[in-house]
Image (cartoon, rainbow, N blue to C red; front, side):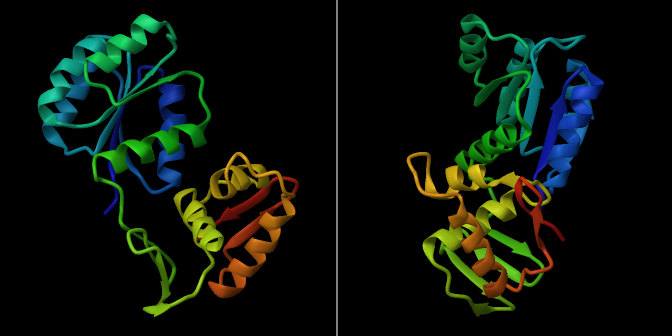
Length: 218
């Protein structure tokens, strides 16, 4: 089931960019532009997470946070402010994370994933075409038949699935799969992608992005 995220951001341009990036990776989104509209949306729909700007009209984010708490919905604050006071105040009010604008889409997606996992709202089984990935068992199957992957190949397909339709650089794959302390060549990403394409029959879906890296597409 798709996760539903409420975007509370009064800058329409920023809100639309956030919405576009979340929709690309299969989150359902609702946009509102002030605090009272956010309250009304929560009464009408069930959300798995709220992205909340601090400086919004009709009811600021800090005040709205107090209204959100009874709903038990995790919140990530989004704001242009970066003072220690604002950050501490937001976290004291119960926010789960705090991001200062501007930020990279891939960082926002990673923070969302972390918060959803913390609340037990992350998907345990991921599907793509005829492939299923069981995150708890670390098992991959094609039409129910198990596929033997190395640990790095498994981690690589999970990264691709979680960032579907997003182009990732070889350096980003290295950081997410091999870790920041890896000092080998980025060519190892190419070798693993080649093997993964063959094992999972993804030749037409893992696209090479010239001078960047790779992207998983439907």
